[in-house]
Amino acid sequence: MVLAWFWGVAQGGLFVAYSMAVGSAYLALELRLVEGVPFSKQVEASRGMFMLPLMMAGGLCMAIAVGLQYFLIFRSAAAVVAATAAIGTAAYFLTRGSLKAFEGSMRYQLGLLSEESKGLYREVG
Image (tube, rainbow, N blue to C red; front, side, top):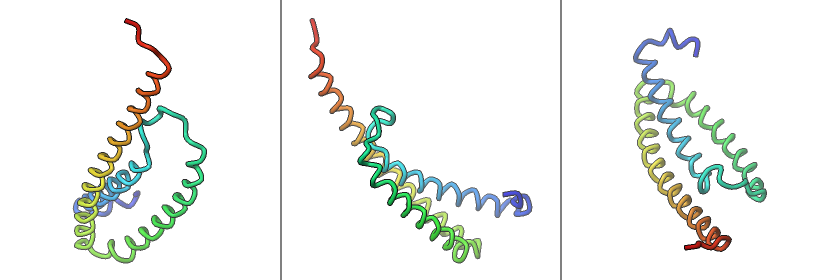
């Protein structure tokens, strides 16, 4: 990042656009891992069993992505523009789908919580 001062405006802007597209796609995929309302219940211990292989696979995918970026994408500005457009479009649709799934999960969990509270308490009046 220190050498970014020597890139110029075009290369710097292209780097920022590419980074935003990749970051948005990554966050959209990570949003799929959130179940229900965040911080509303304790983490289930059985879920940790699946997180380690998922994190290891994620690390492998990141290593592959770095290699692809270095050897294929960052060799020409046209390839970076095409990759930015493709990843940005994918991030848009991934985010829409992730937010829709997140909304459904939140509604389901809130519905369960409201039913549980009816069993514990009785309204007076």
